[in-house]
Image 1 (cartoon, rainbow, N blue to C red):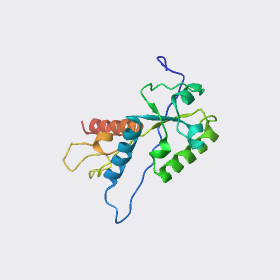
Image 2: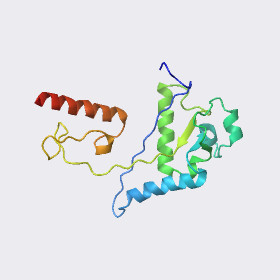
Image 3: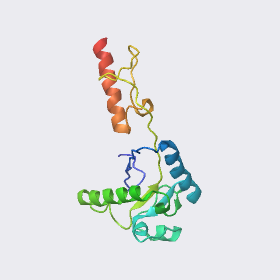
Image 4: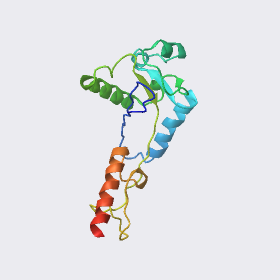
Length: 169
């Protein structure tokens, strides 16, 4: 934290959706959510939680009046409820409310929400418990390999593979 550029803290909330028959186009579904966000804001949207809860879009003026200064200056004030499907929005709000019990202030009218980020996870390759593929001495680790979903898991999988390789040397 020696080179902190802001007093703000950030984190991401992931809402997963598993579809049932007959729906077979989850990638298109996610792309349409991302397309809608880009259509409404030309890129990343930012909204004050208080505005979202009041059913109104954030404006540059409302953002400026807030207690939290946005650090992503290119984000466009907008209305995330026009982008996220209802169930996703409810999940995000419920999680923020639960987190507020652990870290008071998270569920504040001044909290800034940025969106959207859509991630796609393809089929996972067949791996051993040490993350070795069916090709001997070829290991898969990290997000790019479809093995993990996030930096902490990706780092841990890399350490796991490194230990396995060292054990074989």
